[in-house]
Image (tube, rainbow, N blue to C red; front, side):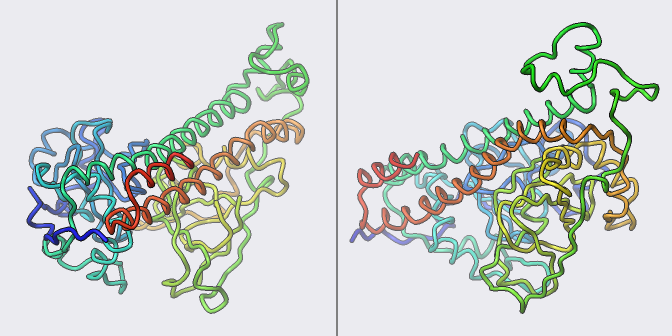
Length: 435
């Protein structure tokens, strides 16, 4: 068994710093473009997720908060809320500079002593995760006490720098595959949005037939489902106006903690990224202390608290979810793709936000959501749309489960590599088999 010297995080740190006070980053400070603000939704996995959903502050504002500004190679931790999140800003990051939020802190390692990718993965492995979470409290808002001070004191068995890099290179294969799956899901989401807009907002197939042509990128059987003219209301002939509640329901299934196993999957708002229907993570019911809502795999989840956060996604598992999440289910399966596309549009989110009650913590409700006016195609058109987009949804969910399997393998390989139980070459072969 290999035994490496034990050192403190402080001894390999170049800098450890906290995020800004909440009063320094507020909605009023956000601008359309600028320095992106990292939040918990960007920290699922070992690498920063650069997907859409950033808020921005001006470069001048970021300069005033420069102690909370981070760059490639920095390791970001969450100390309140979804505690235990640890992610590296990789060299491939989209932006040169970011700023962390008030619930985060960061570590910048001395690269002559430590490889930041290795240190990040160590905190994802059972030993590192335990040492980080030993100071956690689950009372009220989950938090890590004195995060910066306690991080400095954490002890790590540190291999020589060359071995750290070798281990990181091997495990990169798993993280690269995870990133490929994430990007593939983002592409499929964009394809579904584009197709929905073409068929049900811009009515491209109808216009093409009206002008004597054939709809682009569409087979003859599907094209035949669309009319070649509009009615007096400007809708495709045979279509009608309706409401979301005509095609979707909110199954209200309250679940008490004592009714379920502690291992039951639990999705809270903290697990839902903004502007992405892919839900990559979830917890368990072990720490749930109040009634929640039941959900089934394939249900659609809509974050009703502060709906402008645009948290909408596909439930990847059976389980329970926060009561601040509204479960949406199509009345019949052929409407599934149509329903999901509607509730994830900017227009729908704006509708729910406008009707929200509460000033500080605005919430929407199913009554307002169900009243949303929609353009309803015949069921056969909705079915054709679902037939096209369901394989995309299935691939997104499959990617979520594959990524969790890959992440679990990554996090179990690291301690075996560090202990000498597994050689780098053997680990490389295992990674190549799955990635």
